[in-house]
Image (cartoon, rainbow, N blue to C red; front, side, top):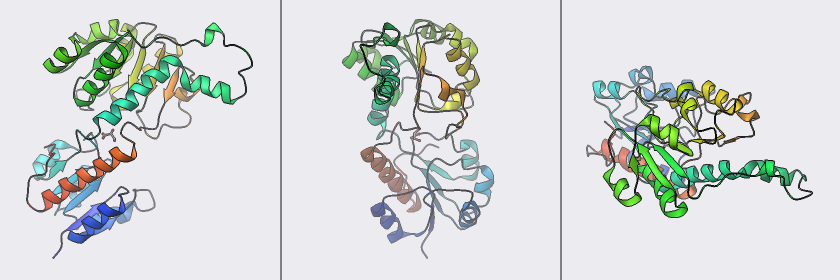
Length: 319
Ligand code: DGY
């Protein structure tokens, strides 16, 4: 009898066909209030789970007694309780590597857009307000030659720092759980304490995974340490930041601006004060969202799932 796979995220047809060839597949393009009960019911017979962007609670896992593997189409694994996966002996696979460059491109675009006020000024032109040469109050700030502070120098952090060093002649400082000798050699990156980084960086770039240790790591104290001219960039996870403290820091001009791809609550509520601030560039969590990269991630996630269900070791196990 074929094993049962539950997919809870839209998947390209060819990948879905590949899964259907080998497994019984229950397919949900996304989980909504309308189909949540059906999804939970499908879990009862699931051997494999494939998807993204949905917290998979331990209660959900409890309703899936046959589950062998969950394969997430993301590098981040904060939607899963790793300890519970270990306890249950369920494999958790993810998609590191293939999204590094696209995500670094998106994060660097946040740096440029925030510093040069691209969104704000493009809207000004579209609104027909460009009737004479712009005033000094509309100038941005330089990116090239400035100091970028990487809070986290893993795979994606290193890709951002490479762009900063090689493309924009920036000085790179970083703080990480452990030193990154390759970044120090290749990018002349200097390891500094977290507080020194916050005090020295012109661009504070948060590139950490969300864990119990990093949740709300950046709050009022940390924003107060930053320069008033600093731009805060977050392309990792919103819950690493105390968002109310960030809003205050932006409203009070404790910092100059922020470029944000991730938020405490996603989608960002329409009444968020962040949307009222001209010194904020907000994106809808698009770090890896290019056609090529999302296809590579989905392919890798399917490869991981298939390997796990065939009794092989998936290429990228998180536990
Ligand atoms: C990831 O892969 O974790 C990205 O944030 C997309 O969710």
